[in-house]
Length: 245
Image (cartoon, rainbow, N blue to C red; front, top):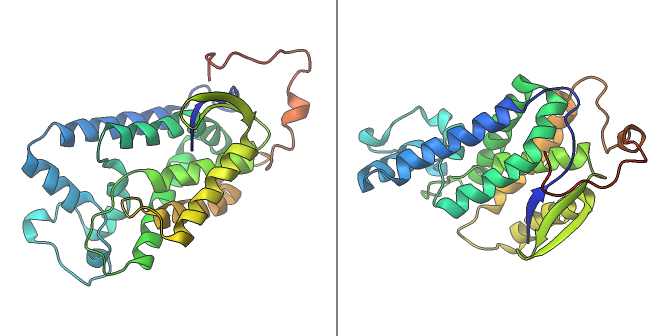
């Protein structure tokens, strides 16, 4: 649908997005350890760390050799596993572009809680939709959906550089791009879209993110970009899409 490139939205409360960068680094480390491991390592990681609804809801049991962590922890661990470079690359690009400003609005610790809770919310809704499924759920999409939703609620009027349809560069307001992205997730969920993608997980992350941004943002941080126009100097020209995020 679109690829985000840059948002030109400065940080107001923190000097650097340590948690956002840390999550990206951890995701790539885990990906490298599993992707370049043996087939047995990959299978063990997916079964032992992925979220399997039938196991989480006690409708099935994993063989003991694959019980790497307690079942409840798989609500989080699944989000650090990815199928391939495109899977992790897309998720981490969204996190890089949008995560820093959400972290800025919440603070480092609260943002980490927000991110992990959005991942858990995505897994939970996925499990509620398909409680007997034995297919492992992996990927950070639930957490990313929460981040995207929080960004939309915080900075809807910020203009974002995107590649529309993967090839057309456009600079458009976040409320257009991200609202369409969120609407697309609901449409695909209602239509039962591609089986390889858990649209339910995305919906769970969206709902969790929408609720938690109300609770975890800093005191005084407004919603829906109410102060953005007043804070931006009128004489400053539009920044380059390749400038500092």
